[in-house]
Image (cartoon, rainbow, N blue to C red; front, top):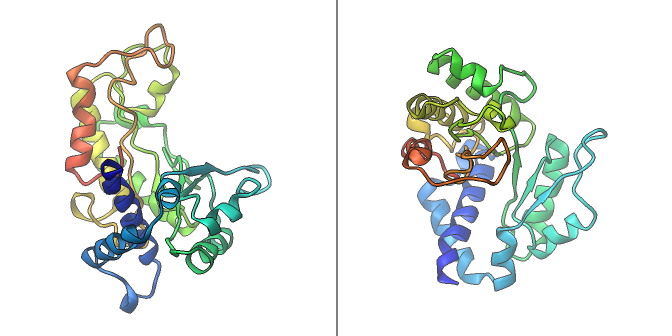
Length: 253
């Protein structure tokens, strides 16, 4: 159990800092204070509540507006979920946040995530096309604008940048990355982390328009064989972009 405590504490602290960014300036917590609050909450949590913080539920109803699956609100009340994927919209996310912070036992805020890969409302070129520009400043700017739009719709967290190295053009997911060169991939990943998270070196998560960046996927996932998913080998170069993303302040792998 002690091994997953830092992970759970991290989720709780990130939730506190991220949701706290939407509060009035005079009532915001510092990062240090948010960590203290997270640690104090962790000591009160049951095993089930700790597991709940690691549970992310997918949204549904994309055509009619994102909604939690049946039973989702009850899970929020019981502390059985820590985040939602594909749920956005200011009023709806605020309603779920009220349930979490007023009706659950420990009142831990929720995190709302989405695949904001090459834009949210404004659509930019796909990642491999942006990388072909060799213009990291423009890539950072598009990620920054995407974060501004997404956070305005209640989102805190994006599953980007995709940092897998392209090894086979038959693998469709190369469109999400920066191509076959690890150095270029590192530069583009760092630019996206800075853009999504805001501030110098991607550390501005206290800003209301900052999003948590996620360097994905697990190292060597991009080593697909024959264009098929889940056929990969571990190469040193596969970890280069993940390492640079973390160095730049990326908070999720």
